[in-house]
Every structure is written in structure tokens, then in C-alpha cells.
Length: 193
Picture 1 (tube, one colour):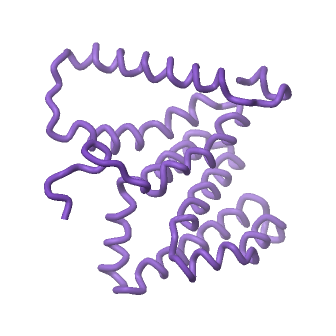
Picture 2 (cartoon, rainbow, N blue to C red):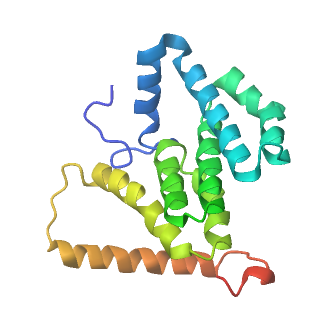
């Protein structure tokens, strides 16, 4: 179907690279109802993670469960918003339990399974948490692995690997420092940034 082309290397996609294989697995396991069942399960996990993080009686958990938009997207479209919410709720739960690296891992995995737009949901976690480096390091691992594998598929490496990694790291840091410098961040958070 893709005529030998690789997503993200040969053409753009609005979804994360592991979203289609995940849906294929859901269809394989449960047939046409697979995506609906899978996203319903993701909603349940998000609700339970919020309840575990904030307490069984928390307004956050029950508001999520009662929010009509959650169920509308799940029932009508079987969209990945449920999946994104699940990863955000799991990251929130991990941070509440003082496990920044686990929170970062949840956000990184969420990024490769949902839309790249998911990064906007992850940004408040990075800006607000004092363990920023542990969170970012763990979030980077799945993203670098998956996107790196896709982008490097069939491409020759023509310079020594340590030098290439150093160059990539320097360029990435420079890009994000410039990006953050041009963000509109309220004065209240300027010191953290």
C-alpha cells in the first residue's frame, strides 16, 4: 500500500508511527469493533490513573469519566484522544508518586502512539516539574528510538557514530533553546525556563 515508502522519511503523517500498527492489532484481536473497544479501554485506564493519583473521590477522575466530549470522541470516531489522555493520566500518576523518569517514559511512548500534537500536552509536565532532566531523558528514549529507526531505514551513516550523536545532540539543544526563547511564557515561570 505504501509502495515501499517509509512514513516520516518519504512522506508526512498526522499520526505517530506506532498508531497504525496498534489499530491493526486491535482490529486483528476484536474485528471491526477493535478500535472502539481499545479506545474505550484507554478511557478506562485514564480514569483509573486519575483516581489513583488524586483519590477515588477526586473531582478530576469523575469529571473525566462524566465529560461528554470524552465519550463522544470514543463512540463516534474512535479517535486517539482517548489514547493521549491515557498517557497524560499515567504520567500524572507517576509524577504524583515522585517517579519523573516513569512519567517521561509515559509521555514519550504517548508521542509515538498518538499524534505529534501530543507534545503540546506534554509541555506543561516538562515546564512545571523540578525533575525536568529525568523526565525529558526518559521521554526522549522511545521517541529517538522509533523516529530514529524510521528516518534511518536504509540510510547510510557516513560519519563516525560518536561524532554524529554529538552533532545531533548539539543541534537538538540549539533548536529547543531557540524555541523556548521565543515562547510566550508568563513571567511567573521565566526563572524555571
